[in-house]
Amino acid sequence: MKHFIDITDYSSSDIKAILELAIEIKATPFQDRLKNKTLGLIFEKPSTRTRVSFEVAMMQLGGQVVSLQANEIGLGKREAVKDISRVLSRYVDIVMIRTFEHAVLKEFEEYATIPVINGLSDVSHPCQAMADALTVIEQFKRWDNIHIAYVGDGNNVCISLIEICAALGWEITVSTPKGYEPTCDLPFNFVKDPHEAVKSADVIYADVWTSMGQEEETKQRLKDFAPYQINMALMHSAKPETVFMHCLPAHRDEEVTDECMESPSSIVFDQAENRLHAQKGILAYLFQD
Image (cartoon, rainbow, N blue to C red; front, side):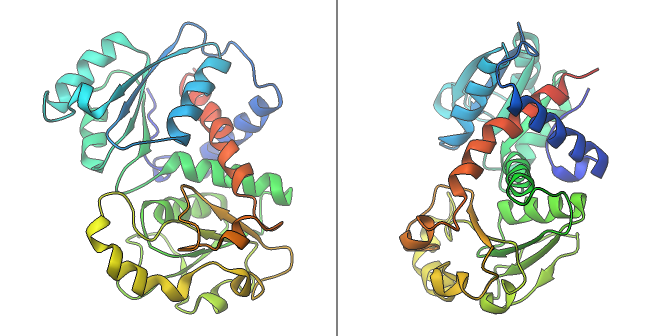
């Protein structure tokens, strides 16, 4: 039985196989690969893209969904994580969890007898990274010789980007203020000056400066990250063909200007759409023999 918790759980060939499957399914979106299969969705954090993309993915692949919010399930509070894991394993065929603590995912995985997907945790966001890779491959029509510059907080999104770049042999440069560097054992370039970091990049990537659960740090983060805003001046430090990506939701005129979000260089909404297609690839792959 396979799970999808972190990019690093899979070999490079496996990651490529999932992306190839996503590309194949995107060309024929309505299929019956998951006919009579039920996906359980557990949300401890609010969601737009994760919930809608997973629900639509299951519907278009012939399956169905049961969605549970934090106040309904009380994961680890109303009921032990290991108990919920074993109960849901008898009701549904696969579970996606969007949670605060990665340890909750790992405990749920330990006791589950069905596949478990990480829809986001404090450590990683692998479904987002898969959609990002799919978007880059489509944009540049190649699988290699890609350079991504991530500018901003070294958070879960940044870590998963580093992991998928390692899996695909891509170069990644991270530019962030001191104290906000990503905690990751895999190799990545670090360039403090964002204008230097983006010079040879094919993609400039951003995320919010303050993630859910960090609201008390907002004032300090706004100050620390101000020089790292993605604006047209920064885009002009890169190549003319460089594109802008953001995992969304975006705080316009904070980490990225409205002008940049709406510019021809922005492929943010192609990227958002690809959450649907990449997750179809993940779902189909987990049910393969």
